[in-house]
Amino acid sequence: MFRLKALAKGKVQGVGYRYHTQVKALSLDLVGCAKNLSSGDVEVVAEGEEAQLLELLSFLPHSSPYAVVKNVETLELLAIEQHSFSGFNAY
Image (cartoon, rainbow, N blue to C red; front, side):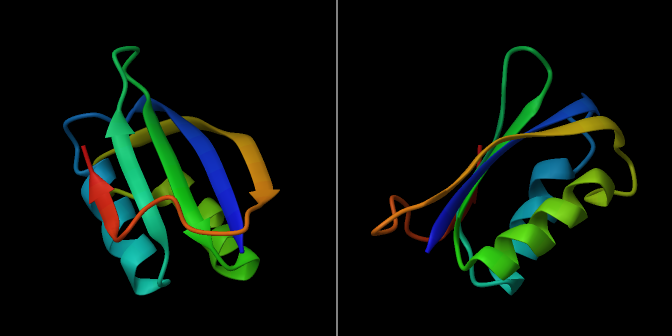
């Protein structure tokens, strides 16, 4: 089991980015959250199998058809022993 932490930059707030990320993460059986930051970025933290996390990571630049994602920065991808979340939430 792994944890992915990524930061989406660009026009990613107020355009359904967190919702579309949540739907994709749930379809991949991932747990975690997507949350707006005061900087205007969206932080995504997801936990699950590495292959599903990499699929989510490749989806993040195109998550919402209304977003203009300039960059997705991977902050961490590391092995973990247990989940820190239950479900996948959007804040």
